[in-house]
Amino acid sequence: MRLSTSIPALAIALATSILVAACGGSDPGVLPASATVSGVVKSAAGTVIQGASVSIGSATGTTGADGRFELENVPVGGATLTASAPGFDERSESVSLNAGANVHDVVLTPQPTAAVSGVVRAATGAVIEGASVSIGSATATTGADGRFELQNVRAGAATITASAPRFDPRSESVSLNAGANAHDVVLSHQTIFTHQNVLAYLPLGKAEYRAAIVFLPGLRDPATGNPLDSRRLVSGASGTGCPIWCLPSELEAVKRRSLELAGGNVALVGTTTLLDQPADYEKLLQALSQLGAQSLHPELATIPILFVGHSQGGCTAYGFTRAHAARVVGFVTMKGGCHNPGSAGAAATVPGFFLIGRLDEPHRSENITPVFEAGRAAGAPWSLSADAYGHGPIVDLNLMFGWIDAVLTARLPATAGAPLRAMTETAGWLGNRSTGEVSTYACYGSTRSTASWLPSREAALSWQRMAGGSEVASSC
Figure (cartoon, rainbow, N blue to C red):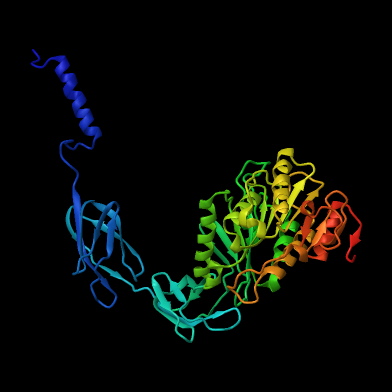
């Protein structure tokens, strides 16, 4: 018998039938059946819920004002429908979907809500008016009695946050029951204030600050090359690097002894490196003004400044004093090699303490010494000391703080805002830089214009210990 179909044609037909069979016998050109799901989302009370989210797999929808939703192109068969809405517990249900239209309503259970009330107080026990309190999106402001109340807060674990001007913000974890809850908050007075790269520590309990001790760091850490920053010295925060002094014990001692100056009525100020240029002087002045506004201590805008500067910071302290002598009580400049060699100008009326290191690089003492000598020749109330070390800051804190305390005592006015009091050269002591001898101005037997000027007997004796002398002439 003759076959009417060629062998190749039979082979193609057979392969096609096998492929169709392997695919379930369906026509690959026909799309699989899909389902549409519609319904209404309601609360347990029967109220429709607008804005509820409904999803099955990647198909999602949102209910309208009538609570209705519709999901299209959902695969037929078993699936999980999930619905959620603000203020309600999420709900997931198993559904079996047929090809075509399916109807499935969802009922959501309202989440239990809580009310939270309480009082915001300071650590002293005083109530705080105007404090902001929040849990999630619920917020309230305390009244004159310090009380607050938050309504419609979700029951369960939550975080309550409170803040008020001049207090550190506080966040606490709370567990809320459905219904009424009571929770008081205690805030700590703020002591740290910042503006850009300047930080101030304001000790508590001071009606008015009489002076700002401003610590100016050098340019870069010689060990790491990183920029220097004195803010950690002022704040007391832990960290790495040398904010002028390096050892934790040194940092603690400098901060503690600084806070004892001027009867404790001092603000401590730290900053990143400020260069010896007018723009950076202005940054500091603007920062003090802004810090005064933040802390509600407007006297910071015009507060007298005592600088403690190391390396570049010392040069900047001296440069600032040349430009703004009326604001500066005194300045300590340690081992900088960049002091402006020009005329001291008005800085010659401001007490200054210069420090050089015998093991430091020669160019630094070669910069400091002629600046000091030119100032003394002009009658500047300045002192020069040389320690036995390299480029590090002063180690003899008794010498530095004795000098600072004497200068603050002599120069700060009795009335805040009044001009600084002048220090006359004849009222001080003088130290012989060659022999270490110290004496009153009247009893000094060598050339006065080359001697170190000291503001008090105590400061002179401390200077003498570093200079290595022993002779003291207090009467003649």
